[in-house]
Length: 452
Picture 1 (cartoon, one colour):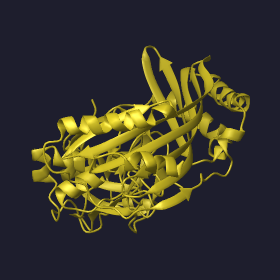
Picture 2 (tube, rainbow, N blue to C red):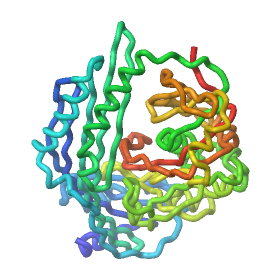
Picture 3 (cartoon, rainbow, N blue to C red):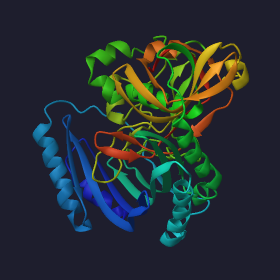
């Protein structure tokens, strides 16, 4: 295969060419209440060619190996039509490597019937809880092998296994509806979704308990976020702002995201990197063949770097960070996050809440939106903090504000870093891409909380 790919590439007249071949096997199960809506296994294969010529890109994908040469010629032809200037693409050292999939209990060796039996049990536990009206479960796993070859001389074979599970218990009373969810993911270990009976029972009970919980009075509070919600905040509100294609294409963001600008106190460090072993966003090489690394987006409170592909790095005069990713062969790689997190500090959770006379403890995530530097997030559940102690449960709260003001208002960072590996990231139609995000507990002063 290596000789065949290089033979095709060598015949093309372009400034840069890359070929990706993609094989996958996956299984999926989806429940809505008592009904199993989807259950099956799928397999797929295909490839794509991307060509750069005089600053213009061409891209063509295919399902049959016989169309490799034809698709390569088409990609170069497309690039020639749009290329009018100079190609900007960071140089790279040729890499030849083979990366095997990491796994403990390979989900592909577990039968579809065994997976269904496990999810049936989880569904039964939730549905048998008094007050639960319905449920939602989505499970998926995939094994992918990607072969990458480029005109730089790189040839890389990478295999990976990924799985994720999302369960939601939905309670209802007199038209009032509340839900609590559990998201779990893994890079190739089916045992992470086994043995969850007590956790499943707990989310069902908490969903019912929320029906009796009061709403918080809207206003400004000292708020403590748990590692899950803090991780989602750093991913959604700041991580996407750090993607260099977003910055390069938006003059307003170029004025805001200036390297060296202070965005928080000295104790604030925000990192993205695929080199962290064992996480869902981890890999050895991105989809342009750039080795994975660790990028300090904010270091000691100061904007230190952004996330790059080879093209955005060249255009902005910076170094590639190994963040060019494509969800499959039908798409070209774009700048994406990997594992994004706030580094731990040295404050315990008890010390963090001990000085709060009246505040809010927000846990887990439900949803949210961002618009440039403004954000609105819904917590999965919440509790009042009174006189330095966790007090009564309240209805899930909505947190709003300006991300940069909020970063400045993080006055304490916990010592309990935890990574959330459930869910996935979406951008430019490519979803869900395996990522992880995390944080220790963090305390935010003057946070706007929506309520009654």
